[in-house]
View (tube, rainbow, N blue to C red):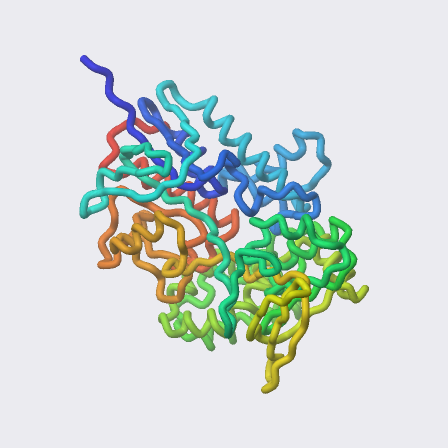
Length: 473
């Protein structure tokens, strides 16, 4: 009798979410089975977030909350200490260390996997997935010419390249002096130390760009421009879990009015401040309730939140490490860094060389102009799948195999993380985990949430009726 062929589980994307799903599957599968982790490059576990080698680029979440497995909260800080580094659970450590940690977790899961369970790292890009009308029997077609037949596919696609800023005249953001993605160009490495720089955006991506410039000894002026000029708030030194009891378990249950939700949140912040607590405790306490609150809102109310309140929420919810915030404030106080509040109107490349930027201050009717040696888009990653150029997303979208969120926040999945087609039917053999879950959960972009989703996705894969194999309890 011939041996049972191994079932193949394909994971597309090897950022945090893909690595976390792979670790979960390797820990729980009994053979024969194969986990194919597919990534464009061999920098597994790195990606945009953890691929930096700069010690100035710190995690925005305390080390004690960054374990890959929510059931083992101390996993990451234990790893850091095992390397002889004296960090504590409330510290904000270099992001490069986290990439090392993810790689170590994958290697450990691979070495401890049951007999017959294999991990295959595949350096390739998935161009398309063929499947039947119900999403079963998926076959992945790679840019190398290889095909992979899988029992289940997990799309762990992370953040996509930022969308180029809209301007009155056409602008090519793929070549200097215009830079659409600060991580994918060598422009900053060759930039004259006295050159003037404009960063379009004032969020965490802009913070990263400022730190990179300062670290390489930049002396020229650095300007940040955004419509509201809101800067990410800092975490507390030695950030602690939010104080218990400030946000009740049934907080805002059934409240479907955005105005009423915001009124109640403000009340909780006032009450907590009067009791000697910090506003961060309320924002942190809301974290577990945010998906429910988001889902209680109508599509119209969600659109209002994204347009009017989203930037304010982001600057308070997605905070910067204290050391990063101090350096930003020091650069502002020294006058090297400045912030403009207004809307980008136009950009034209000049012979200087450089770019002339036209912008309109908030509330003004007249435009202003400024000349800069380089202009960098720091508006953050794109989640608008109608505009994403990724070939796999384009293929699935054009085939009606994705339901794109009307607010351009991601895609739709069911309660088992199965991707929903445009007509609402679930793809039986294709699931998604990653920041595009923001469309349904809003709170789905940081490790503390993504690791829970990754563990749930792995459990759904293993329980699927299309998978007939033993699973370790």
